[in-house]
Each structure stands twice: as structure tokens, then as C-alpha cells.
Amino acid sequence: MDSTWGQWLLGLATVAGFFAAVAAGVALLIWAPLERPSGRPARWLPRLRQHATRANENLHRVRLPAPLTRRLERLARHPARLVVAGFAGAVVVGWALLMFPAATESGHAAGAVTALFTSTSAVCVTGLVIEDTGSYWSAFGEFIILGLIQIGGFGIMTMASLLGLLVAGRLRMRLQLGTQAETKAMGVGDVRRVVLGVLRISLLVEALVAATLTWRFADGYGLPWGRAVYLGVFHAVSAFNNAGFGLYPDSLMRFVGDPAICLPICAAVVIGGLGFPVLFELRRALRTPRKWSLHTAVTVRMTGALLAGGWVLITWAEWANTATLGRLGVPEKLLAGFTTAVMPRTAGFNSVDLAQMHDVTLLVNDVLMFIGGGSAGTAGGIKVTTFALLGFVILAEIRGEPSVHTRERRLPATIQRQALTIALLSIGLVMTATLAMLALTPFGLNQVLFEVTSAFATVGMTTGITPAVGTAGHLILIALMFIGRLGPVTAAAALALRHRTRRYELPEERTIVG
Image (tube, rainbow, N blue to C red; front, side, top):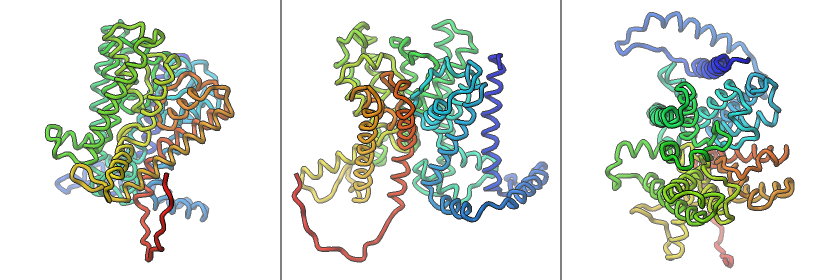
């Protein structure tokens, strides 16, 4: 389709159709009578019920093979598996849509690996790309990518639950459990409140950031208002969902000294990376930190410490580097250093050339990316709470204390084991992928480790080697993005739900440690 407006309309229609299909599927699964508060049914309800009942009967007539039915039933009993299946389904749908010829500027179908890589990166809110988003993909393709980012950041189970609430007004237990695994709701009864709260916060933050960016693009850079709105919305959604997709080939480098562009994007990244449970609690008790839960206190304080520490280290290391901060004035250096410290929260934008950074700066970014952001949010990594729990355990062991305490609370041993398991499994995965990439590509350790960590932590920052790692390297990065987005979430859910009672204990024997 040659017309840009035509491509936009086609993109909107496709995304709307995808959401409508999901809504219809959820409605059939969780259909319940809808009534007004007075108890009298609406006029349109009898006809809608009739159509829904007929569709439900037709659906039940479809007989799946018995082995497939048993597999689906086993899948539905495990919330973590439902989350994985939901994300995988979104990736496949995005893959198919991005392979349409209309999705590219050239009008030729994208390669299978390119489309799969882009779809995975969008759903997993990573931001790594093989082809430049703004020049390779058409308006239709960009709309698909934007929709996948929103679906991935919001959580495919959260989205399904929201659509179910809008259609049926209530949730079945099975869908509630699936949403609980994604949103980390504290109880099944809280899922409804969580999902609607997530929607309000997401729309509010994205709208505010989009409005600010739109004004700056139009007023400061002379762009037409239509183009400014499109750029503002795209970058706001990408920033809040920690995706890092941009429509400029140099990301934010052309805006390195512009606080009206960089700071709103940084704010959206930090807010989205805190995690929805933290945002809910901050909304209720922002001015009373003493009433914060342990999770909120740890997340906020660790986020602040990592941001401040990263800002200082990165700015100090790159202060005299003429290829990054050295050519800027002092205010611009401080702004660029802060922006660069925020983006390893798993956002993926960059306002300076990452390929020209010193090795020490790349290592600092590796650490920040691996830690990531808050739990149950749009950020990736092992999460700041996992990192903090490991620090509490080490501190207690150094002090010789038999149990771990913080903020007048004792941490259960199960939580400590979960944090240790997630951290060690993540380290093992990153190291294994790094070895494989070193063997398959001609790049050095610094570049490969940065790329692998960025993919696993769903950051999207790169030194520029993503298009050149070859098909095998792209497949490794696809696996890393998918596992990195879902691995910590599903592993934590699986470990929390898995509980076995040992009926006896074996004799104790110690090994030499250290």
C-alpha cells in the first residue's frame, strides 16, 4: 500500500482486529450474564446472549484430539505455563503480521528471522533490532510493533483479564490464577483491582509523556502536529513499557542535550520499571514511607541507589571521552550521564554512542542491566529485590546471624533460596550464551557480553553488532529475550507454588567452604 495514511489505517485495523479476536475468545471462555446495577437486563443483552450461546455451542462441537486436549488441560492448571503460552502466542501472531509485504517500506516481505526477531523483541519489550524500525518498517509495521509492545508490557494475561472484565464483568478462577502469576497480585481476589489499576496507570503515564513529547517535537523542532503526535505516542509507549524501540536511527543521540525529550522518557522508564504493586502502594502512601511494605521500600531504595551510583560512575568514566560526553558542556554531560544511567533499567534508548564507551562503562552497564528493575513491572533482569535479598543474606552471614532481618522483618528461608536460584540460573544462562556467541561471531568479549546481557535483561541497548551476528546469533538472542522476559517471572511463580513436605531429615554433615 503506497499511501502512508492507508498504511496507518491498515495498521490500526489489524491491531484492532487482533484485540477484538482476543476479546471474543475471552468472552466465550468466561461468559457470565451482564446486568445493570438495578438488576434489570439491558435491552441489547438478550440478543447478545443468544449469539454468545450459539457461538459457545459451535465452539463445543469442535473436537480436539485427546492428547492435545490433555496437554491443554495440564497447561491451564499451571499459571506460569499459561503466561508462557500467552507470550508465545503473541510472538507468533506478531511474527505472521510482520511478514506481510505491507509491513515493510519496500513492499517486500521481511525475512522470517527478521520478523521473528522483531516480534520477539517487541513482545518481550527489549528493543534490539536487526533493521532500523523507522526506515525499514512501514506505518503498518510500526503499528504492529507498537501493539506488540503494549501487549508485552501490559502482560498477555493481564490484557486477557482486562478484556474479560470489560465483556463479562467477572473472572473465572483459572484466568485469575494466570493473571496472578503475571502481575504478582497478593491474592486471587485482588486481581480485578490490580488489572484495572494497571490500565489506569499505564494510560495516565503514557498520555502525560506523549503530550510532553508531542509539544516538544512540534514546538521545538518544527514538526507537523500529526507527525509530532505519532512520534510522541510511539516513544511514550515504548519508554513506559521499557521497550527501547525508537523511530530515529540514532535513538536519542540527536536529543542528547534536550531535557524536554530525555527527562520525560527517563521518567516513563523509571515509573514503568518500578513495578505495578509498588506504584499502587506509592499512590496510597507516598508521603508516609514508614507505612511502606518491605517490597516497596526495598524496590524504591535500591532503584534510587542504583540510579545514583550508575549516574556517578558513568559520568565520571566518560567525562573526558570526546566520543561520548567529552564534547558536551557541563549541563549536557550531567543530563547525558543521567540518561545513560537510567536506560539500563531495561529501557534500551541511548543518547550517546555506546560503541565508543570505555570498557569500564560497558561493565557498569552490564551490571546495571543484569540487575534490572522492579518486580511485576515492565523491566527485565533478575530484579532489584532479588539483588537486595542476596545482599541481606550476605550481610547476615558476615554478622554471624542465624536468620536474615531487615526493616524489623525476618525474611523466610524460602524467599532466600528463590533469590539465590534465580540469580545463579541467570548467571549460568548469560555465561553459556556468551560462550556460544564468542564461538559463532568475530566480536570480542566486551561487545558480546554487553549484547547477551542486554538481550537477557530485555534492555535493548547495543554496541551496534546486532545485525552482524548471523542467523545463529539472532536465534540465540531470540531465545535470550524470551527466557529473560519470562524466566524470572515463571521461575519465581513455579518456585513459590512448589512446596514439598519432607517427612524425615538425614544426618547432618558439613563440607569445607572457601
